[in-house]
Amino acid sequence: MVARITASKSMRAILYYNENKVEQGKAYLILASGFAGDAESLGREKKLNRFSHLLRLKPNVKTNAVHITLNFHSSEKLKDGKLQRIGMAYMDRIGFGDQPFLVYRHMDAAHTHLHIVTTNITAQGGRIDLHNIGAEKSEAARKGIEKEFGLIKAESEEERIYPKIKKAEPKKIKYGHLPTKRAMSNVLTAVNRDYKFTSFAEYNAVLKCFNVMALRGNEGTAMFQNKGLMYTVIDEKGNPVGVPIKSSAFYIKPTFRNLEKRFGSHNEKRKPYKEELKKRIEDLFGAYRRITMHRFILDAQKQGIDVMLRKNEKGDVFGITYVDHQRRCVFNGSDLGKAYSAKAVYERISTQTRPLAAAPSQLRSAKRIDPLNIGAKMEPVSGRGGLWEELMAPPQQDFSVGMPKRKKKKKKQQQISI
Image 1 (cartoon, rainbow, N blue to C red):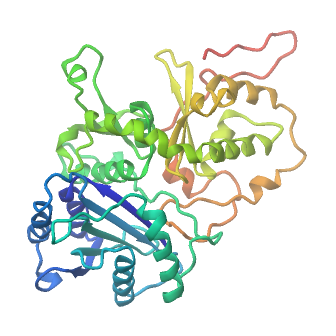
Image 2 (tube, rainbow, N blue to C red; image 1 turned 90 degrees about the vertical axis):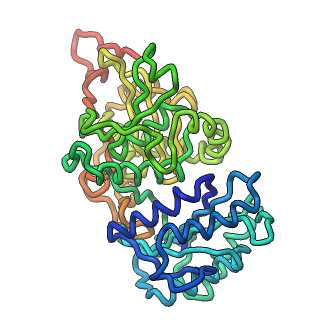
């Protein structure tokens, strides 16, 4: 079992996220602890009012909503009754047993997973401290529950967590159609909740992995000067599709000003994963004596890394961004180090020209990442196609622009504009 705890400033946002899933037939409520009446008779307003009553007892606390997910291995076929007991046991062990909480079973992925909505404001007007709750309480609770209920341990090789965010589908976009906003809202909620980014460009790099893009407008426009922000779905070429929607129209309020507040803290949160990402990139280079940028990008995707090339108006590559879906963090190449910048990567690729006699064992034994089947036992990679490329690839890019060409006799190698 894998548990994730996220604190929020909007109870309405996390509650309505789950309620919208219920309306779409992708989730249902299995437990309402601390609520009067049957769970089936509770409407969303009654649920919100129950939490709002507690929030008013401590109005000076802004971060007062808690969203928890419990993810189970795909081989575990758990019934609602057992999931109810697991949910209650987990909440007791992290100190939330006396709090009102709602447990939803979601069905939008191949593995079983629960979403729990609660608040850290108590009936006495106190506040449950959330600082370091993951390491100090959640980890111990998770391990105890795995043992008590006979669950597959999260530390096992087969229990790896990868993104379950469903892409917005450009072909299904209709102007002004409500499902378009819902699809975008699902992406925005998950990205803002789970990923660590330190700039607007990095934020957009993650969104583009799921066919969504944030728009600020051109410099000098009123929208840009007022820090306005809109969101749109994009097609496989990165072109906007449908009608853009204002950031303030979404429940989680992913406005530019709110994003700016998070950039600094995200820089600290992603630091522990920097060296690991560099090692995984080095492994990709070390696996081959001959490699192209196209091959590098595809093989990186198989390892849970989207490589995004940034181009200027002329089509020349001037930067590179790495989106690590395994650790859910984003790094510009220069942030990782000089060796991982766009110029350095192209130079390294251009020097690796000698082919190997056989395919490297490193990539033959690599694991295929299935973004819709978190925690599933992953199959060995065989070939370059597969579900990851189909579902998780970034918008299609022209990799021939700015790429170094092979050396020809009596001709100098073409230079790259970086």
